[in-house]
Length: 521
Image (tube, helix red, strand yellow):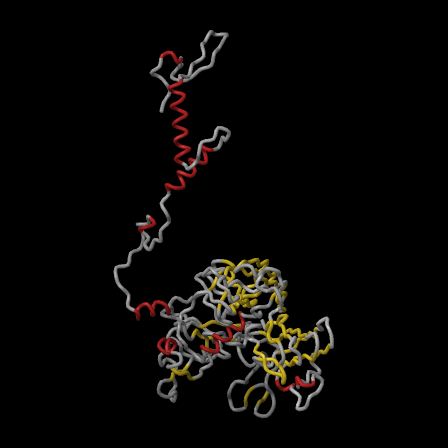
């Protein structure tokens, strides 16, 4: 594209358009329709190439199109495994292949302190990886790195096979090895040296008192020797500089192996306990629900602790929709959705973010890739229809109840038993509350007769009491009787003692229904 230089009538000046100038008489340039259309078409081609549809009223389409074209022209990022792929050519290149033993030897020396280094510590606690330099005998099998370094240098005899002795540093000053300098000549490395005063003399005052007494005459020894003159004693038990008492320790091991008296399994447990200082599943403002009209379960929580065997994570402002017909994050962990089945509800977290999950497992759901932490927050049950919709329920904290919704799969509270049940009988709870339920909430009624329920068969009376032919001693649990309508209702909640509860009814109109449960989160 260029200016229309080949069209003389356009009126270009120095190859460019000019405006009309009445003062100088300059005639304004003209723009030919052919050139104007060509410029416009070229710009429109760029806009379309950027995935935009030209619009007369929009004035930023060209810029947006150029950005899109540039973005699409950049090749996708790939995983590079060599420096050359990053364009780095002036770099170290190894010319040999290291063996496993050579790599382990290199790893041993990667610590900031090599094995055998002596370090002063200001406390009487020996740090991990060190031993106090106390002249003790140690096992070469327990500390192979240190044994290889020290050898038998400090052995005095009697250490026994497979043992070596540490140097003794307690109460000692350390001195740099002379190593040919001549200041402390003749010393062997690691040799011990007693204390000593450098040869010196003291000048005595002229008025010093000399020894007198037997054997002396006027300060002169009667045996012909010169008399002795001495100063008074001063000082302590040793010659020393100002100092600070420290505990000298030696680096005992570096290799990533179990050297020293370390119980690795116990250490792993300690690490887990130190890191996992919250209880997984603790929550604030937890609410879970299903409408009974779909395969969606909703989870909301102000705060929720998720975790694994090593650590935990506190999540905030959790809002999730989990679809039982999907697979993976915010869906079913594995398998195919089946009817009349309990599914545990989980909140999961990891590098991939926060999501929900449904699982048949009450303890170990299959986590999708990118998720490492989890917490079970609820249960949901599919209905027996072909839709396999989730039963209508609401939950606050760990308290759950069925929600009666006209037109849904819970139009009445689920019926656990009905009709005449006399004598009282066991009623299974597995289809009405999940396997982790701790309590169950029940309601029972009849329009004429006795009805009642209790935690177990242990409440069945040996002789008819209260409920007459129902032979169920419900006290202190609920029971009811009404000789006429309306239908009376007796409600109650108790801890589940087993997989069944006890129910008795004297009337054909007797009915036992489940209101909900309290989950053991």
